[in-house]
Structure formats: structure tokens, C-alpha cells
Image (cartoon, rainbow over all chains, first blue to last red; front, side, top):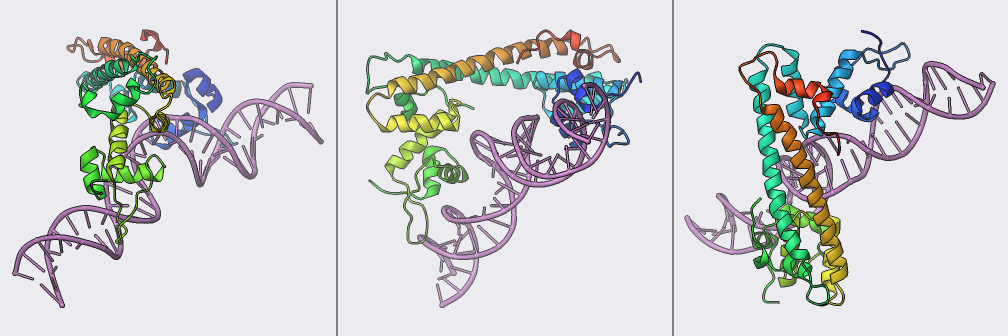
Length: 140
Length: 140
DNA sequence: ACTTGCTCCTCTAGTCACTAGAGGACGTAG
DNA sequence: CTACGTCCTCTAGTGACTAGAGGAGCAAGT
């Protein structure tokens, strides 16, 4: 309500790039703001708050659809906790899964790079990649 | 040289889906194999080896371009180690970077889900996402 | 010979979350 | 009045596939 700002300033205030803000509007994550006579978007304080919410959620690795749900839940001050909590827990499980997978990969790639490096034609990197039996785990 | 197989069998033997094999051929990761009179691809042992190499590298999280380089290096038995080792080490650094970032995210999302759950209108999930000051770190 | 069912072919378009660029209009400071 | 920055819309590109349409080849059974 204090003042409405153009998209560039909304971008600076939220840390979201200008084309990305327009993209969020296009996919309906952000409501279409009013325009000036010159057809330029004008964002108010609520829009900026929403943008910062989105940015923070994206930084935490939430995908767009969960963010859409979280925004809907944040909109109604009654019982947001169950739904929001479920989404956050699902995301946490996803993060744990990714960390576990990357840790397994790390181990194998590290083993691979333990190349004696003096030997020339028997490179562990190439060898390990070529020989499937060298692999520790195949799980996704 | 033992026998050439059609794409479906190459898929089963390598664990790479049929459309993906065709895609690899399209982007030049895999040479175009000879065809039967009926225009069907025929893969020999070297092709299957290459496919398994690619699959294993993909499973370890290598991207296509690094794999392309690794395949080129594997092709010449002289001095493959320096280049291959560099690629593998770069990938390892990338994995470490991702793990570090995910670990930081995990901490924050976990903190977020420590919701007392009895309180209704003050949900930590929504609150943390809305309030930027709650954030521990902003780094990418 | 015919049909059934599987595999194969090419081609296009869709995924996710943007990003880049073209080509143009507006707004303001000098 | 001109220069520059900001804004507009629209299209296409990214990576690494995946899905589907629409059709042809091929082997086995009737």
C-alpha cells in the first residue's frame, strides 16, 4: 500500500530476475499485477512479500508445484500446518535421498580418481567406467 | 564380431532404453551403426561396450559432454590418465559442492519442520518461508 | 496366404525452470 | 531532441531425455 514499484525494482527487492518474475506470472504462480497507462506492471507490498516467499522456497530447493501449494496454504490462516508440514517433510525426505545417492557416488568417483598417475595405459578412471564389475552399487 | 544385435537387445544388454540409444546416436555420442536391409540398426560388441561405458558414467552422474571426452580418451591407449583424471576430479568437486549445498538445505528444512504441530495459525513452515530473516544461509 | 503381435523406423512435441535474444515502445535526464 | 535505461511481447534454446503418432518389418501360428 505504501507504493507500487515497477518490475525492475521488484526484481532487486526480491532477488528474482525480471524475466523470471514474468515467467512466474505466466505460469500463474504470481497474480497479474495492475499496469500503468504505459502498460507496465506495478507491484505492491503483498506482491513483493509473495516474491520473497517464492525465492526463499526456491533457494531451499522446493519445486514450483509444492510452492504453489504452500502459497495457497499461506493464504488461509486456518489450519495451514498439516499440509505445509507434509510438503516440507516430503521435501526433506527428497533431500535426504539425494544426499544419500550423492554420497554413494562420491565414494565411487573418489575411488576412481585414486589413480597412481604414473602408470599410463592402465587408467583407473577409464577402467572403472568400462568395467561394470568394478561398480559398488547400481541403485538409483 | 560374434554377432550383431538389434536395438532392443542392445538396450537390454546395456540397461539404456531404446529411445535413449537413438538419442545418443543423434547427438553423436554413439556412432551410427550399420543397418539391415530392412533399415534396422545392428550393434556389435564394441557398440555394447561403449553403451555400458556411457551408462555407467551416467549412473555416476557424469554429464554428456564429459562422457564424450572420456570416450575420446578411452579410444587412444596413450596418455589417457591426465585428461580422464582431471575430468573425474572436476566431477568429484562438483559432487562435493552439491552435497555441501544439500546438507545446508537439509538443516534448514529440518529446522522448519520442527513444528510444534499443536499450534495452528503460527506454522513454522509458512513462517520461515515468509520471513527471510529466519534463513541461516543464502549461498548458492 | 493371412493374421496376430512384437519390434523397429522416423518425426514431433513435451518435460522443468528458467534464460537469451529479437524487435519495439516508453520514460526521463541533459 | 536525443540518448539511454527500462519496459513490453514473443519465440526459441537449455539438458537429457520421454511420450506419442503413424507406419513398416518380421517371426510364428492357423
